[in-house]
Image 1 (cartoon, rainbow, N blue to C red):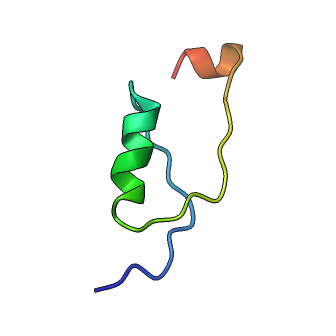
Image 2 (tube, helix red, strand yellow):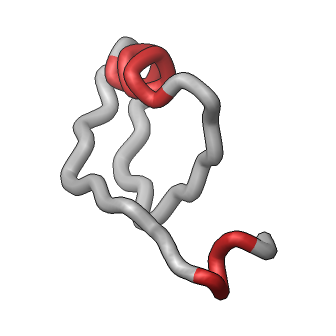
Length: 44
């Protein structure tokens, strides 16, 4: 089975480079990356 599309995924990890390598190893393509910061985020 081939993955056709993933619209949005949030995954919180301690080791971002290792997590990227893991998912890219499945043949997934990363289309973007960003940082989230601020008081509203720290409580989640």
